Image (cartoon, rainbow, N blue to C red; front, side):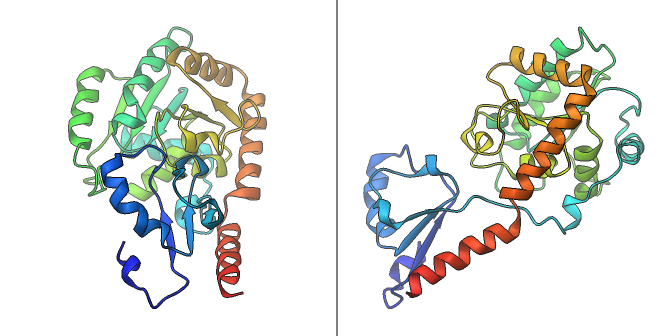
Length: 281
């Protein structure tokens, strides 16, 4: 909030990446004058806007990805699966469900495991990969969540947990998991936007997302993926996708088109240019 004190700069812009819609009022009362003093206030999600803020100052900039960086590379599935076998021990020829996100209670990995157990009644050879390498320094609780998940997974040979990054190329492994999975899930109950959903959609993956607001900004239910509200519903959708590869491909192509039209860097750059121009008029 240091920009609040830069009073000589008339066109101050505040970028907020947090949810201010529901706040602790004593703290918000102190922060509100500072936030409201900015010439423009930019949120990544309309649902995050606090009603006390002046609506004329608000802009929405949806996050975006750079399609040219290595992280967004599209790899043939066969190549990706061979990589996952070599560096992760995941069998090559099996239905693979993956969630790529840090071990966090809001990502609901326990719900994913619950769903996976239901899927095995129809696809007993299915495998689950929870890819959440502990590289972020702002998530000290990840270790506790990981231990809880590891205890639930036990010694299951069909559940693969990736937490310790030692000895692995985290970026490359993540890209291979996104390309190699048959179904990608992001079972978040809270999510600002979730660029991992965008990344998977760019790779022609129809993502099954939880009810989190940010995910609903990207997935159009039944058009380019599915929004699910329970482990049972998620299991049904995954079984459907595994049983209907043609439909999975159609939804995947639609997912990529959604990202192409809405969530790439050129659109985000244009958002910034329009904002700066409006300030300088």
